[in-house]
Length: 186
Image: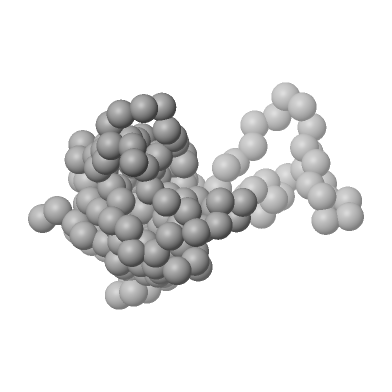
């Protein structure tokens, strides 16, 4: 935002940026084409976009603003993508998915469209990182897909270390509200 707003009413002091009240600020560096973000989106059961097919006028800034993803994330999630070379008709992954991240090293299954359905936990996995890897905006989404069918428990899956949030490895958990795994309480 600092780079996008190099104007007289924006100033820096000690690496902190200030703006004056009542002024309009830009939320991204490059202007966004009005066509940007109008391509085809494929969402998961939580309403988050997993894949997006680009249209003429899309840019890294425009896609980043619409889907809350950085250019670095887009490049990491789409290995064949080259920065500043985004053509119409490109199918972009907007979640980590195949990219394994710290705290979410396990494997997953997906439906024919590529939407993640289940996840098999690995040592060191945490709920928060699994939620991040699969584009769930809130940890409660993962919990909702894995509530026990009886009782009042928060989730049915087991933790190897509850204070740190590490999950026991080898558990198959749901990544879909449409296909929850609701095991009864033990």
